[in-house]
Image (cartoon, rainbow, N blue to C red; front, side, top):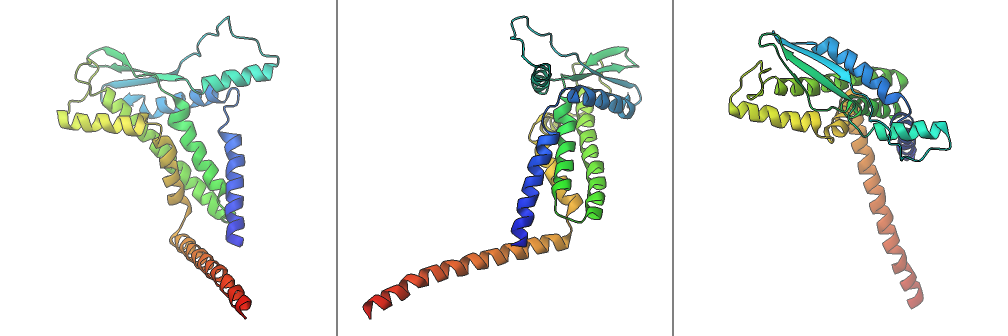
Length: 248
């Protein structure tokens, strides 16, 4: 019963935290986009010996004059934030100091690249029914790992851009085989939406659980399976007793 209550509490806390952190609140994406750009410029502003990177937030699209007006200012801001959360909001300017060439990355989505993985780790760690001191350590390691993951996404994208054969900003030259590997890794890790949802779950497991926790989960699963089997056997025996009683 205790394990069932713990699971129910975990699911309830996860839903509440998801409502708090994943809803596109007005102003949240713009604020995170600016933070994302400033942090990325500090870490990746100088790329290699001659590369320069400058991340910048892109302005939201202009409103159409045909859009119906909202009756509430908050509803209008919320609707605008929800639409903004589905759009690309940042881009990076690239330059090669040696060749004096410039370029730009494809439009990027700061919410999908950084915010969602971070929010998922925070949600999962806070919702886990473990002592608070363990949750604090798990939060520390989880945030370190998820930001390393976000940094890897940015690094792969920039390395892919700075190694393009047909671009004068190229800093590196790879063989066709390694370039194909880099391109596929960038598509899967940086741009594929599933990575932003599955990798945080793995980070949560690594940062939160210990070997004895996994053994306890296995024991609970085996106990639950045994109880369900015994319950099924008892339910099958009861009709037999009734039949014997009728025969007598």
